[in-house]
Image 1 (cartoon, helix red, strand yellow):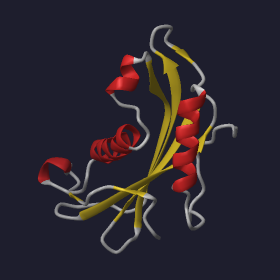
Image 2 (cartoon, rainbow, N blue to C red):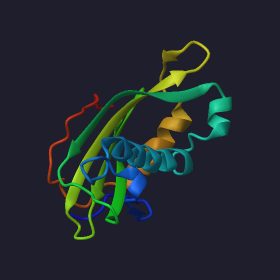
Image 3 (cartoon, rainbow, N blue to C red):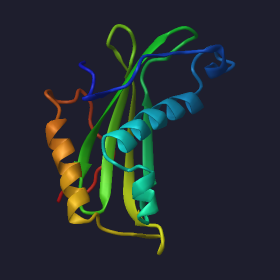
Image 4 (cartoon, helix red, strand yellow):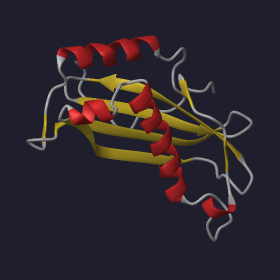
Amino acid sequence: MQPLPYKSKLKIVTQEMCDHNGHMNVNYYYQLFDSVYTAMYIKNLGFDNEYLASGFSTFTLEDSIRYLREFKLGDKVYPSFYLANINKKLLHFVGILQNENNELSAIFETVLAHMNLNTRKVTEFNDSKLDTLLKYKSLNNLNEVLPFDLKLKIRDL
């Protein structure tokens, strides 16, 4: 499978990341996925400190991780992500981890809600932010059909 449009730097499984079974612990799968999509979320989508200072952010509503192949000490991990869907209040991200043979090793999905930090309630993106997100999604669409079904869904615009 080809990597998803947003590619992160290669990661190497360290001893610290391994558990008593001799493979990467589930906590590190989550940390790796979270750090990769957070970098995309801040750099490419503009959810930076300035956006937080404006009184808005996102909160995670749901995550899903599927473990398909294990990673062991010293293994190379290739993370990639894309913004799968957007509506007026929600974002749906999909990420994958591949091994050095380009085999799919793990699948991550997350749904984030746009939040007004003053009221602590879900709110719509303003038109400018929604346009930015839609443009990014359009420029970073997949060139192939995913070889797996998505578990999480959000309502289309």
